[in-house]
Image (tube, rainbow over all chains, first blue to last red; front, side, top):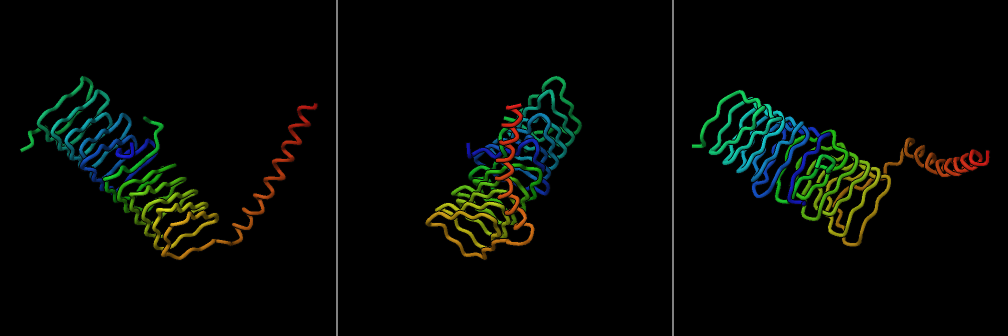
Length: 105
Length: 135
């Protein structure tokens, strides 16, 4: 449990730089900055602005910025605005995506 | 999941500003300024920066200026910088290389007095409750 980094709903992070290459990061609150982790989950209701780089990324909330992942899942509650770089993407019906999607080179 | 408290996991590194948190558990490497209710710095954690808290439990390495109502330094804690407290508990083995200030000023005296008052208040409250029940 202590391996997980969790940003709860009431929390807001600014100018954040978070690195957790071997572990999982869950954001339920608001995060502005960069996240680099093994797995990142941006929960429903969360707000993210910046860059995320992770092996697995699940977007359920609002995101503005750049996403780079091996495997990307965008849920029906997501609102994404930006640049998506991924080798595998799953987008649920209802998700709002604006921006570009391309392969990781 | 939504009721879970915020945490920085072991192996994680964080730098930035955190606001709005009621409680935070740190097991990783953190450089931040935090204003919070309760903060726990775990045994393997390393925290650098300012903390303002109601309660701080330190088991890891802390560098900076901490101001807390209540501070508990466990046997594995390593502290440098400055700590300001109103209530301090230190376990045998805690290592302090810092300025330790008991911030005794007027407001604290007031809070002390009000604390003793609270006791009598509680008693009188009980009496009132008894009276209400009697009525």
